Structures are given as structure tokens and as C-alpha cells.
Amino acid sequence: GWAAGRFEVTTRDGVASVARTGADADVRLDAGTLATLHLGGVRVGDLQRAGRLHGEPAAVERLAAMADLADEPYSLTGF
Image (tube, rainbow, N blue to C red; front, side):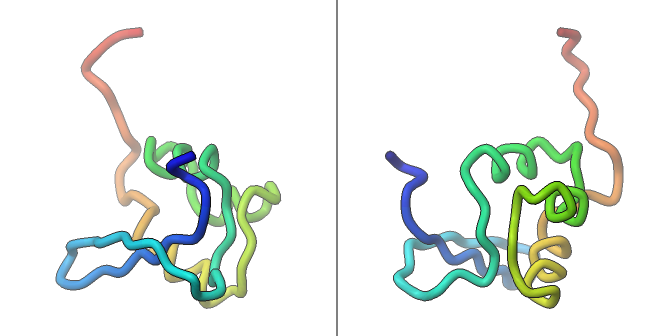
């Protein structure tokens, strides 16, 4: 599917870009874990401790700098 393969995420001046790559992964995670990060309710370190993502400490810290939110997410729409 669309989520299969390796992707490189780069940021510059607060803007992220994503591209397919053949390079070795610095951090490994599946599409479900990426979706969890996208929703913003769980921090990268928590997912790592739960075994949902893997990588060297420096790489995981870089991902956390991009993905962890300063404020808790919220929605004005009730479910």
C-alpha cells in the first residue's frame, strides 16, 4: 500500500517534507504508530518504551523534536 517502504522526513525553517528513500532507516515504525503521532496525544518516548518504534537515541530525539506537541491536542467536535 501507500505506507509501504521507507520515507525520509526533513525539516527546514519549521516546514517538513517527506520523500521515498532507499537509505537505511534511522527510526523504524509502522503506519499505525505514525498515525498515533499524527493525532498528537502520545509522545515519541512513550511509543518507544511501548516497543512501537525503534532507533538510536539521537534519531529518536530528532523525531521527538518534530512530532511531540508542546500543548495537548483538542477537538471542538464532540464524539
